[in-house]
Image (cartoon, rainbow, N blue to C red; front, side, top):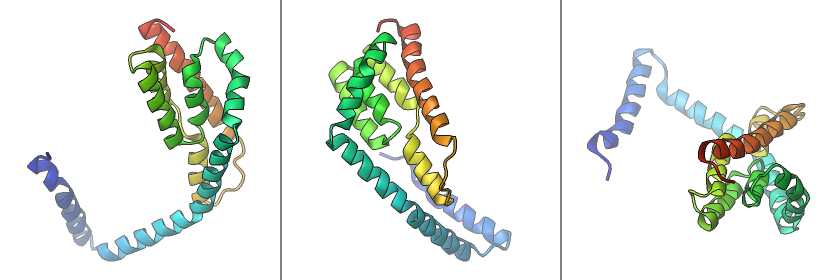
Length: 176
């Protein structure tokens, strides 16, 4: 149940913005309409990149590409003492936030939130980004076609997030 103060927050905020605009002689309604139009233009400009990303992701999972990739990286993960349970999450996280949430939920259900894998997965979710989604949205919004060093740098950050997640949980909680 929401408190009275919480229920009043949004109407008071909207009224405050409206009256501030009137005080500053800003055409509030026209500014709102222009902002909404710009938002729709941005949404339309990034839609093709998002459709492509979602399609490729679905094809990758359905084709067995994820399982093949897991088999290829498992020996290195074993060497680095990365729990096999979090590998699907680590591979999916740069591609899809919702796909990563599915893997994260499975880890928590299968291993438990207080297990080494559950804790490492929790830290991993909070310390990495949906790299390809973010690049598709932001670069698509500003019509940038060449990502340059963005993808390699972001993926290096995701890999660092994975390694440090496992290390931090090992140092703080032991195990693993």
